[in-house]
Each structure stands twice: as structure tokens, then as C-alpha cells.
Image 1 (tube, rainbow, N blue to C red):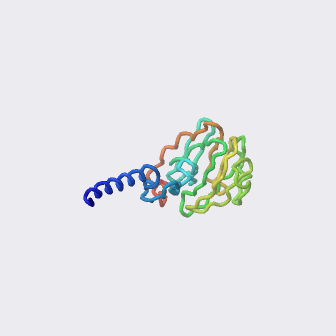
Image 2: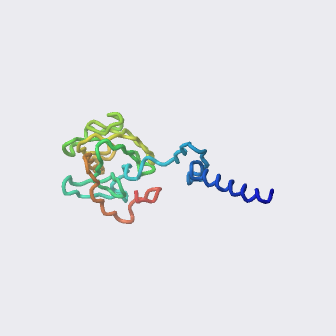
Image 3: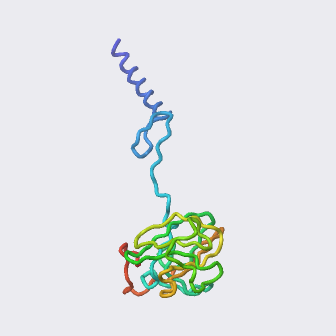
Length: 201
């Protein structure tokens, strides 16, 4: 009699295990076991992609310069690798990264109409956490990240308070639906100062 119950008992255990696996419980794909009816814990991920970071560096570094057909000479700011105009959608949040190890920079709004004398630029932070007229990150030391900053719709002529006049460290930030970054500068000569992270600035 016990020999007849054994296969039945084993079969019942196998069916119960299969139902448990299909009806809840199991693993999340990360090796974490969750009880039936519970929601698996989210796997931590970075909320800031590389496209949401603006990097600053001297245009004389390997970031280079670009003569933009609409805005003239630009350099020192990028969403990708080399100098370019910047473009984001309104309401986007970005981080500002100083890509140079020992050189401080700022990202400040010079004007909403043109590159002027840069008199509005300062090494002090102004404008809070929204990039709009009157905004300035303040000093961002080498290798540091600042932000997040929210983007208000508009066109902003941007500069670095330390290097706007001396190195023409400037670009244009367009914040509008479907805005995208402009073409990148051609990398300068191989003798340009390389950054600690190997990106060329």
C-alpha cells in the first residue's frame, strides 16, 4: 500500500511546486526570491544618462572649437564628446560636469539674445535650480558634478566666468520641443591636453 502512495505523493508534490512557480513566488531574474503576492524590490539604476550631462572643459583642450553657422565661435561645452551647441526639451533635468581635473569652470547664462561682454557672468551661483535668464552654476571644481538643474524653455547664450573672454569658452543652449545638440567640433591636434578620464579634455 505504501508503494502505491509514494508515486501519488511525489506527483502531488511536483504539481504543488509547479503551481507555486506559476502562481507567484519565484525569483525576479536577479536571484532574489519573492514570496507569492509580493512585488519585487526595484533594482537600483542610474537615473542620469550620458545624454543628460553637459561636460565643460577649455576649448584649447581636446574638446576643441567649432565655428557654428548660426552662432559663430563656440567651444568648451558638450552633450557628447567635443564642443557643440546644446539642445534639450523643456523641463528636462541635467547635471553639469567639469571634465578637467584641476581647472574650475562655471556654466552661466550670458544673455538670451547674443554673446555680449559677459559682464553677467560670475563665479557665484545665481538663479537657483532652474536654468533660465540670470542662471549661473557658480564654481564647479575639476572633476565635480553640479545639479540636477531643470531647463526652462528658451535660447540661452552660455559662458564660463573664468574663461569666457580669455578662451572664448561659450556655447548656445536651446531648450525647446525636439531640440537636439548641434554638430561636434573636429578633435584638435593630438598634442592637446588630455583629461584624466581619457576623453580628450
